[in-house]
Image (cartoon, rainbow, N blue to C red; front, side, top):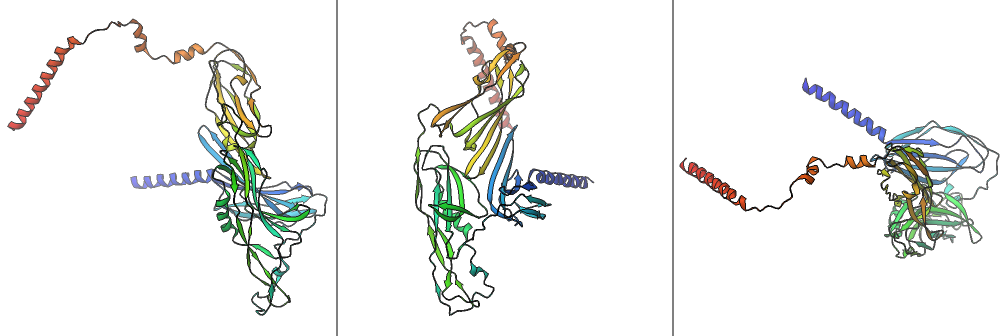
Amino acid sequence: MTQGLLKKVFLSLSALLLAVIAYSQEASISLGPSKIGENQAWTITITVKNERLKKYDDFPDIEGFRKRGTSSSSNTQIINGQISSSQSITMTYIPTRQGTFKVRGFSMQINGKQASSDGTTVKVGPPVQRQQRRDPFRSFFDRDPFDPNRGGGTEFVDVKDDAFLALTTNKKEVYVGEGFTTTLSFYVAEDNRAPLQFYELGKQLSDVLKKVRPENCWEENFNIENINGEPVNISGKRYTQYKVYQGVFYPLNDEEITFPSVGLEMIKYKVAKNPSFFGQNRQEDFKTFYSREKKVIVNELPPHPLRDQVAVGDYLLDERASSQELETGQSFSYEFNVYGEGNISGVSNPNIDGKDNFDFYDPNVSENINRRNGRVTGSKSFSYFGIPKEPGEYKLSDYFNWIFFNPKSERYDTLSSKLIVTVTGESKKNESIQSNDLGSFYDRIAFEDNTLSGSARFEWAKIVANLFIIGMLVTSAYIFIKK
């Protein structure tokens, strides 16, 4: 009977544990608005909570739209020591024409969990005819409906390609801690005639990024999962850019950063000298494209007592208090929210000293990071609880200040509170002193005799005690030997 009861309790606890895990680790899909203009984008966002977004299925193809690319964002919160987080990947879709399009319901495997969407209907506003660019990765020869091994006697020729691999940075010179965006892309000219195709890109990138990533930098990776061409103009010539990697690096010291030349192997097809409708019209070959070496100069921050501690970026302050009319002994909340562009993960909390007027407790921390359009932006919020102890009018700028270095203005700046609070009520300072009373033992110190006395009178007591102990040992030994 007892074993049966224990088994039921065990099964109940197991079910409860599984329910808690399922609740804490969630995967969801959210869709964009139901109406957009012809110059607006539509999105599908997948989100996981309390775990890292490691693996997910391809986003669906939607009639009337083409995929533009993905962006990622993450959010971390620490409240009362409990950490919660979420990570999202957003696929952007660009409409190709005007009309009303039905997005059918679909499912995606996200970190091994099934997430579903019922779909929706999207109405695209007045049309602006978009020029459909020829994708150089889709050749006429891809449409050969016959066995490619036919036509063994066909002569193939190498068509000169107009493409290149390039690693670029948006800045040539930065300060320690200042972020710069690094992009590794493959460019194909609009008039390129050589059929090209990526080859084992995931495996190659793993090796390439080991060489590209600087050891002395903090990295914010944009996690490009789907490679889509984007039209760009380089020196008056039109290309299609395929981004294979993009991230923002924040130097940790003033060592010069060198990105070495890296290679990317591509499938480059040779084409039949005399193509025919029947038989093989292309032959697979390989070519490795190499990027050029790239250097970024890193400068020390200007002299400052906190040079090695301050954050670097373009930041602003958003603050709020639960009330600006306070009473002594009653708690209030104050939020110090730093937001802007920079290494949000490296933003530390301001140093707070409530002095004799306030007691401030360690803050709850909430962090939000967005990686989009080659920039890393976000916010870090510090939520404090405080208790006023003395009546009066106080500027919170005397207690809350946060120093940082702004690389745009090339000077140090301080985010200071602009709030003023008024405290009424009786002083609580004496209560604080009483709460630290060490007890009656210390209270008697002032009344006890502090005259020095010698220890000679205790010598006879020591001798007697030692003789007594020796006697006990001798008696015990006698009894033990006799037995």
